[in-house]
Image 1 (cartoon, rainbow, N blue to C red):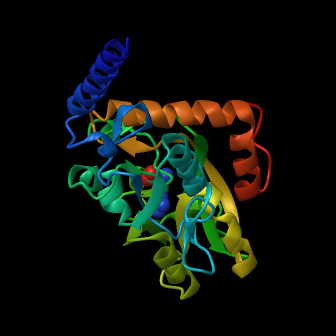
Image 2: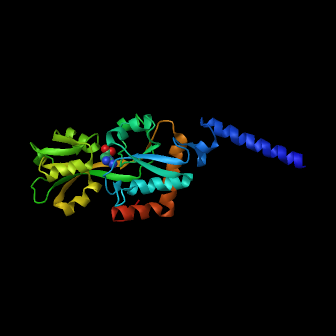
Length: 263
Ligand code: ARG
């Protein structure tokens, strides 16, 4: 009897080893819950581009926090691993370069799902709706696309806001991140700035106003390297869970300041 159960145990162990070999990793410790293989075993490494409040921004301790990070923390918790946020350029996030070069397992950076990006990496289910917005100095008479003719418009490099401005033949000045973009508006180097509407709110307290919304109907998704099916399934599984158990609404309400509109 004892010998039989020992043999059964050995068979179990063998099959456990075999299944972790299938994942292409060195050992079972490289595989988190659900057969997900991570770049650094035990850590979910995420690339993000702050400042982009309320999605990713540095708190007083210099830690990157925000809605994207909150959701990534939920994913890491479900996988039973730690979360590491790496700050990289939005250009290399949205082009798939960060994923291709092995900088991170996931890109989480308010990334709009577009066909061009879908050709380069895989997106999770959408988790946030977005439109573009126009930020101007308070009292400015710039209010629509027509009024922007001949004006200098700050855009963030490689974003859908830049694409929107170019599609509308606006004269753009490109900045690497939102912070530099708003700084240029402060110093009068540009007349207005275009970026996702949800990140413009905090600047109203700094002497700016959101002049209008351009309804582009965008949706944000998290990105993984093409073929990282187990990780993508895990992210979508966490999105499902947090939408069902109230966590998503709690995160949204804390970070956005209002409850999500009827889903
Ligand atoms: N949603 C826009 C895009 O995908 C802008 C995102 C910029 N994100 C950031 N963290 N800087 O192009």
